[in-house]
Structure formats: C-alpha cells, structure tokens
Length: 186
Image (tube, rainbow, N blue to C red):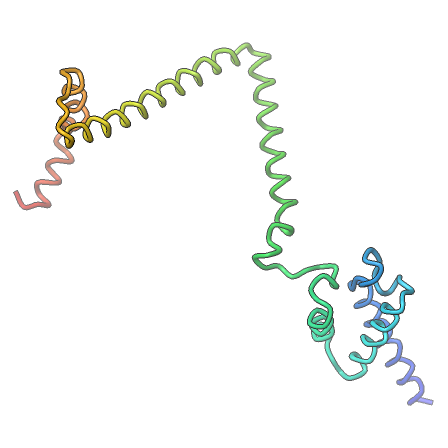
C-alpha cells in the first residue's frame, strides 16, 4: 500500500513539474499557445518529452536547456537576458523613464505658462543658442585662420587681434601659476 502511495505521489510530482514547464514553452506549430494548452501533435510530443526527461532525473533547468538546444530560443516564453535580447528586456523601463521625463517637461511648461515665465525662458534659450553658435563659429574661424597662415595667406588686422586674443593665456591669479612654478622647481 505504501509503495502505491509513493508511486502516486511521484507521478503527481512529475505531472506538476511537467505542467509547470509546459506552461512556459511555446507551441512551435500554434505559436501563440503554450504546449500545455495546445492540442497540436508537436505539443503532445513535447509534453511527452518533458515527462520522459523528468522521469530520467533531469532538473527543470536541464529540460529547458534541452528544449532550447533542440528547438531554438523562441520555444521559451521567457528568453534569456543577453546582448541580443537586452533591448526587449529593457524597453519597458526605458519607455517609462522617457514618458516620465516628457510628463515632467509638460508640467514645467504648464507652470511657466501659468506664471508668464515661458516667454522669458524662450528668449534666454534663444540667446544661449546664439552665443553657443558664435563661440563655435569663432573656433571654426581660428582653424581657418591657422590654415591660412600655413598656406601663407596674410591675416587682416581683425583676424590678428582675434588670434592673439584666443591664443594669449589669461592673466594669472597667482594661485595656479605659483603652484605650477613650484612644481616645475622655479
């Protein structure tokens, strides 16, 4: 009597493990159903294979590995995390973070519009953009002027003044140059 109880418990344990694994394995014929829910021939064969593997003493991890090796990674509902699947795994987090930022920006703009500060901020942003563009253009012009010097093209007085202004080091406050001179041994 005890041996039949043990056999029944063992069979129930195998069935429970097999069902758990089968719920996490995609039917290769149906695609949208697990092999536990599918009645396709391949699903029936896969359920039998899983039970046979469990009876052979394999762990759940080993059964999943065998299914993945035999049928590919797409047979599993939860693909492993690696460089190829990182975008799939991280996209919900990235999307939520992006939406939170957009939501915060919309709230900030609403508050600024309510208090009448948005126009001032827009003007300040435009001024900062113009300043950054002029700085970039100035640096670009320095490169052009340096190329012209190498080619032997004379500089205009304004270009000479700009080159000297950019290339002349700023007046020292004493702290850095003193530290630098001490380090150099002067």
